Structures are given as C-alpha cells and as structure tokens.
Amino acid sequence: MAAARSSSRPRGKFQKKLERTAYLFIAPAAILLIIFNIIPLIASFWVSTQNMGVDLSQAKFVGFDNFIRAFSDRRFLQSIQISLKYTAIEVPLQMIIGVLLSAMLSKNTQFNKTIRGIYFLPVVCSAVVVGVTWQLVLHSNIGIFTYWLKCLGFTNVNLLNDPGSALYVVVFVAIWKTFGISTIILVSAIQNVPDSLYEASAIDGAGKIAQFFHVTLPGIMPSFWFLLMTRLIGSLQMFDIVYTLTGGGPSRSTTTIVVYIYDTAFNSMNKMGYATAMSEILFAFIMVITIILYYIMGKTSDD
Image 1 (cartoon, rainbow, N blue to C red):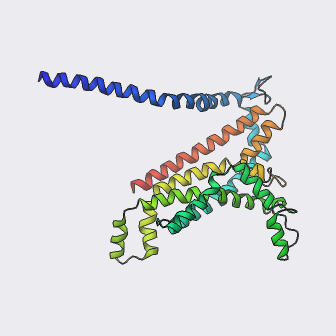
Image 2: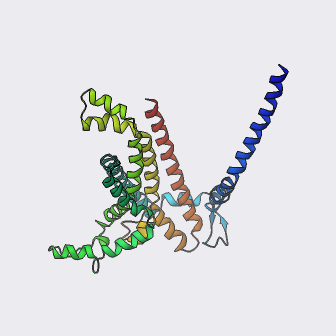
C-alpha cells in the first residue's frame, strides 16, 4: 500500500511538469494571438464609438451614433446586398465544383496527381497578382480574351466596365483562385472513406452514382461543412480581388462591404470610427452565421 502511494506521487508531479511544458510551448502562439487579435478586437469597439480620422487623432465620443448611421447609410446597405449576392453565387459554385472535381480526381494515379497540382497553382499565387493579371486579360482594349472575342465577331466587349457583368467576372476569378484548395481538401476526405463501404454497397447492387450519394457524400460531410463555413466567411470578407480587378466599380456594382469600409476609412476625412463601426456590424453578422452553421453541423453529425 505504501509502495502504491509513493509511486503515485512522482506520477502526479510528472503530470504537472508535462502540463507546464505544454503551456510553455503554446505560450508564444497565445501571446501573438492576444497582441495581434484579441487586443485590436477589443480596441476596435472603442474606436467604433469615436468620431476620428485615420491617424486616430481628435477623437470625439459619439456612442452608438456610428452604428445607427450605418443602418441608414444607403451605400452601406447596397454593399451588404452586393456581398450577399456575391456570396450566394460564389459559394454554391465553389462547393459544387470542388465536390465534382474531387470525386473525379480521388484516385492516386499519376495523371490525377498532376492535374491536382495544376489546379492548386492559383491558390499559392497572391490574390493581388491574380486580380491584376485577370484585369489585363479582360481589358477592353489590350486584353487577349477580348481580342479573341472580337476575332469571333463580338463587338463592344467590356466585361469589367459593364455593371451587369462585372460582379460575375469577380465571382469567376475568385473561384478560379480558390477552387484548388477545396478540391484538395475534399480529395483527402474521399480517400479517407473506408473501401469496405464501397465494397458493401457494390455487393448490394449500388452503382457509381448511388455510391457517390450514399457513401461518398456522407463520408466527406465534416470536410464539406468546414469548407462551406470558411468559404462563407471568406466571401463576406472579399476585398483583394475586387479592389485590384474592378476597384469596386463600375458604378459601385462590385463594392462589397469590406471595399466600402476601406474606402470610408482611408479615402474620407474623420470616418475611421464610422468605418470601424461597420466592421463591427460585419463581425457580428459573420459570428451569427458561424454559430448557425455550427449548430446545423452538430445536428447533422448527431443524426
């Protein structure tokens, strides 16, 4: 009995030592997270209640006036509408393309590996570079794509300067930039689905299409939900491709929420507090969507 007690004491000390060591390992990341994420987030709430310029000088407390002003700002409400429209188009297309391509490229053949590598190349490119490159490709005067269309007999091709088509061009470029990561993640998820499930379904007479809907899709749902959540958040925060490709134009037809917040903060006088208030509204909106998706994800996993 005494021997058991004496052996338990060192084990407890060793466990505490392991915990302290673990805290030391995570301390650098935690400190950086607090300094560059938590503290600025808290400070932004204070800035949103002030009327100040971009240099944070001459601050004047205005309370919730900036938030009230945002909901009566026609341009802000229009930017919300544009962001929701962009998200409603981009996210479903992104997920459908990712699922279909991952199903076709899930086998580890040399051809599939090569194609997956090619599809992943735009992901590692800078979004600014992608936006500028596609702007040159689609330019109404010097763009090679425009030149090809003119050779085919099309005239007055001006995709980036047409309010009716500019947003759809942004959607196309955004999908082209990011669909590779969706495909790779879903390929990994498909490869982790047990082969025994496919063998059992084949014995029951299920074909490839039936296996896709009843074996593959249920098996990749955790990865699917993760991608859906990240794509929704990314779409609502779309900025870099829009700003380099169209600058929010023409006629503000591609001015998303973040683009409008940026223009308000850095291209207007004494509106940093107002821009921060709009950022807080966007933060709250994304947080609500994330919570709803987590709830739905939990319900589906329980079923």
